Image (cartoon, rainbow, N blue to C red; front, side, top):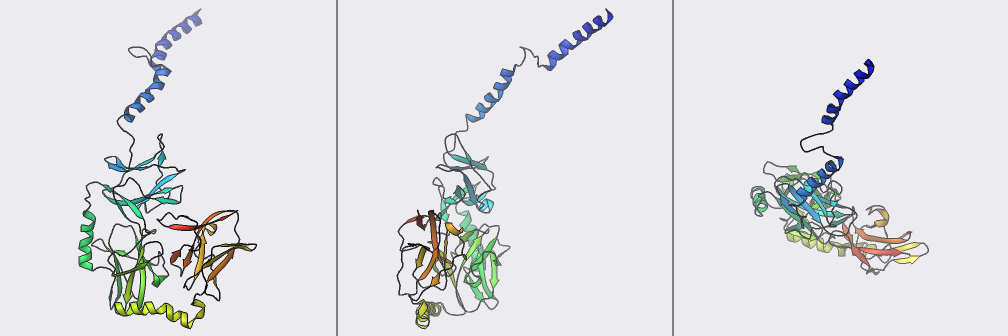
Length: 375
């Protein structure tokens, strides 16, 4: 009987202890059903005052980027993430829109949406935009108390102190960029349009500058911001079409502006006279389908022409075309069934659509790519 008495006493001591651990409170225990319902009530409360944003907007919590449209994925690329196409992904919402809240320091930022990893789109709801350097627009968002006049005002002081546009002295030609950037490089005729060869150095006044020794001549150039955004020099006295619907700045070294312009105008004619292979007598032709492959034809004055498109990952040096006796450039390429966007790359820096091919599609930069379909 003694062991049974001991067991009864132990049971009497355990019963209230288990009750306390189980959550007994005034008003009864918290059941599993009640505990499960608590998160639902908590989730509903914050959801009520925060109505879904319709357009991109800046608040105390951060910038809410909003994209509305069909997509498998949406990212936001801009000056705040070095124009990365993968760093900042938007999440799809119940209403079908895509959103991302990102905390940014006070300032003005250019940005675009990247749809499905490759298609660049401006924000249709953005109140302000800026040229993207490709004939289109980047959207702008202002964070904090940054008045619209702040950027021009900040740019005005360095321009007055350091000059406007590129300037030549005995030491060389100084190129100066004014604007927000993590890095700035100079690309042009003088360095085969390299995006990394000539880095500008940030100055004490916030501008970026480089002094470069150049032989006498005329040079087209652009600034490359943060490794991927091409910007023309707004202070250049002269510009030329860049082949993307935008402009390259022109710098003349060692000659007067008028004399250099006259020389540049005369150059193509002189070249054609002394080198008959550059005189184009043939005409542009739409792509021809043959047993050997698709024959692409470009008609125009050029030193080199490359075919670039979806079929070669837009390589700029993989498919060089050959010039014929009539001056036209051709290339025959075997392609599998499918639809391909393409362009001609002339002289390594000027992108041209196929003027003989009426089929086209948006190139994602405000222009068009020629389109060919293989069945």
